[in-house]
Length: 79
Image (cartoon, rainbow, N blue to C red):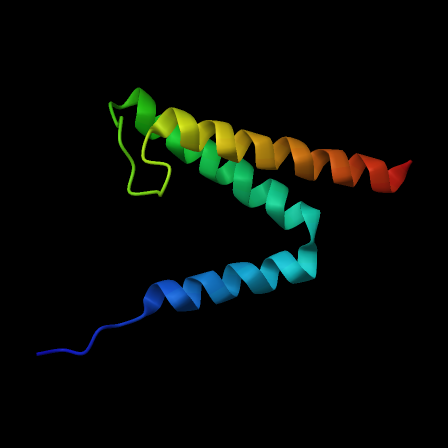
């Protein structure tokens, strides 16, 4: 029997590192990337996600909110 590979923890740590280094740019990028992925999956018929929010409409709203908030922080930093 193979031991469990905690790959997700490595992925989460990498995303956290990128978020720390790139700040709101990383949050906006990952949110837009996730939004586009979920939008495509929803158009293809996915209604339930493995995400904690389950309903893909809620996931899209969540990712959209993150993207808007990150863009607002980026714009605010230039003003």
